[in-house]
Length: 588
Ligand code: ARG
Image 1 (cartoon, rainbow, N blue to C red):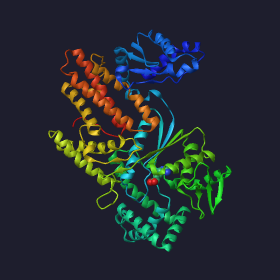
Image 2 (cartoon, rainbow, N blue to C red; image 1 turned 90 degrees about the vertical axis):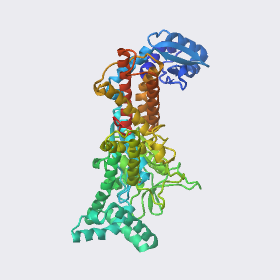
Image 3 (spheres, rainbow, N blue to C red; image 1 turned 90 degrees about the horizontal axis):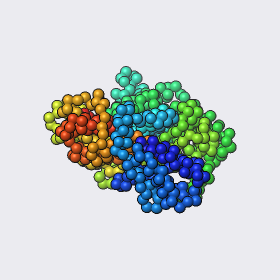
């Protein structure tokens, strides 16, 4: 609706502006005023264009007003406010016509924009031989939402799980695990029996400690890394086994979280192993490669330490090994040349801000990218804190294991669901507990501005009131129950709605903001914008439902209209939650 309005204003004001010698004024800034009593939309075009038109803003606003006042079919009222704002009030008929139109579209018209770009999203990107802990939760779920959102708007999305599988930590695990793999073969037992992921993680910790205390071990690990990277067949086959054992557990958690990552999205550091030398050559061609203390580096003026020393990007170490950054440069080459990405999005914690700045700048300056116009965006996020405001840890100071945390959330959700509606069968309550428990954990994370740290609290995230997943899920279930009572299948309900009360109009207006909200999430890469929207939508529904009887409406016609409004609210909530990777139960 906003888009149509903008194009109408543009078209109507064009002759006026041409008279002032202004042909281009695409930037008309039409906003929803924070105070809704100031109209449905407000614009500051007169103020913005006054200077170029050499005309006082208030005079320009008056001339615009006269033109817009002619559009009687759109506006019930247009007025000037302050130094030249124009507030626009739409007819109820315009609102309901637009509402009925999007209600009939698949996914409420999300794909209407047809953006048709290829976006690569690098997320989750776990490290092999380590259990996922809460730190991985954010990348996994934020990245998954961004992928769903950008895809829903009609783009091609390529999900990339950039596994940490080719660096020193991997060699250290192999150093300890190889003898155990041999033992498993001798005894003819499956490797994962002797080396479950928890054991691999212990081995990594043991190796770290040993390397610290013993130079000989450290040297052996380094040699092992070089042999692996050179493609020693036995080591490669051991490496593969360990990778698979690790990923079994990771996939179990992805499935539990309902995250859309599969084996086909695995594109770890190792994937780029044969492209590294070439990438360094490419950088060399740009003339930016410098030898420094035996290592090959790129120095860029903008990167200096606090003390003013240059901070190089090391692309190849003195022993010939490649770095974390080299993998990323090779990946950028691949993603722009082969995957033909228009936009590449990286989701990691905020500690990697500098790393990505350096990688992006190096890639641009050294001619790594297929196309200069590609957008490279790092999406950093803060930490998850415990109730003590320190990074979340177990009592004994260990990292909290993600799978234990999720199990606890499901258990607690089962209690909440049982308290709310003990009449449901136990089996169904378990099913709903999973949706609510996982939904609550995800939503608590997604609803925060991602740049901030947040405190993890089961009580708060599972509350049935407030900006939580259970509140939204409950609003959805409540609408489903209205349809059950009416004996109508909402999936086949295609009636139209019209405005007869302010609460209905407010709810329609909110629903009409859905697409632009999703577009904003895709542009700014901030899921909390969608969370806030859904919360406002659920609240608007609640007000409507308090004030406007649906099944007991005064007339059959009004009942049908309100049911139509309920149904589109239901679809919007369900679609919004789906984009957040959260399932909405029909009953709870
Ligand atoms: N595996 C890395 C880590 O756990 C994250 C990788 C992020 N992606 C990338 N292309 N560097 O820190």
